Image: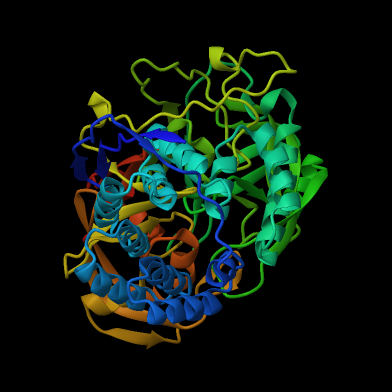
Length: 562
């Protein structure tokens, strides 16, 4: 294929402006890459990373100049969770081979996993200057751009990667994920049928995902639409739902109506995606299972079973939504609550969470210049989006028999009213904010209102002071109780233009969370800290504004520094 070698762009990566000059618009011949049948590459595709490392190691020992084998070792170590070893191997080989695009790309993957996003961007762009035809580099660059809400630019990189190497499993599945919902189903079915060497756990998750997509596509009128476009914003009380043994609020949320038959108090959880109801609420509302589901979250025990169901009517404040796909747990209680609602449900809105004043406000996002204004935004109740965009958009006026139009992605837009907002990294539904502890190293922290406490990872806590074993406290998530708790006496966390003192903060092993997110998670900013703050969230553009007002609501009696 012929690929135009234009890779320069300017990106705001968590507050750091990355600018790389654009290459000349020359045409370069990039051959379509075929899947390698080398035993090491096959083992890697099958998820046997230990075997892949051994085979790559043997190849590099026989030929020390085999940079593909060295890069394979690095990526195998990374997949095995041996991040430090992978970094050392990449650094030592880049010292003698600084122009190796393969090694630079592998180094970028390490830096992304370490949460060092700016360094990852620099590695990818340097790699593309040396070899603009390397599909893996373009795929990795797409991932980072997507995390940074640069979706239009990222999507172009993904399409280029897919044209170069459509048989790469990561590239192929990511390309499918960015198609309209109706096309995703057929593409995943084809992938499962025609692709060999799919790991068993991935097969299970893909089949569950397809079932969820079928349910989403079958929703009436595209799913979860505003009943009336005349009401486009609302405010509602954000109440404390429960207290712990120290009489601290360990959850805040609001009441919703389901099918006008059941009222449920849902905890607002910025670390969750979609709407999750308990069995009793679903039964009262008359919800009927559509497809089965597995529910997991923070904790060391087994996941919960559940199902997906359609809610004909959801009422949140003065907003009424129709035909919404929601998740239901088979348990009578969800961490002691009627249910949970992820803040990303409102990703098409400006979300204002005034925790001290106990109020949430939903309003329209500022329009992007030159883009279709999304008045009367939909609700992402299922966490996978709806079957079609806003039906009033001219982009979706097509005949039922014609293919769904390509999704129109946009890059982050920072409007005049958001110049003081901070960018965040969005990994799926999760919000990661750049923060610093005493050592001033950049770290990523998960914003999670569903966590009653703020938490540090073991390495982050050790960098800030001494860590002690904790046998008094307990921590419970959707997957049960967390084992092996520790405490750190007190640290200061700088994030989003403010400093928050964390007292007697819990410390846990976050390796699992970091692996799942694909970036190093240094801690969780939970309700223990958030209850003093007003947080404005723009999911569309990956922007957040955090304010501490000592005179706001409950802060007048008990402030952040007390």
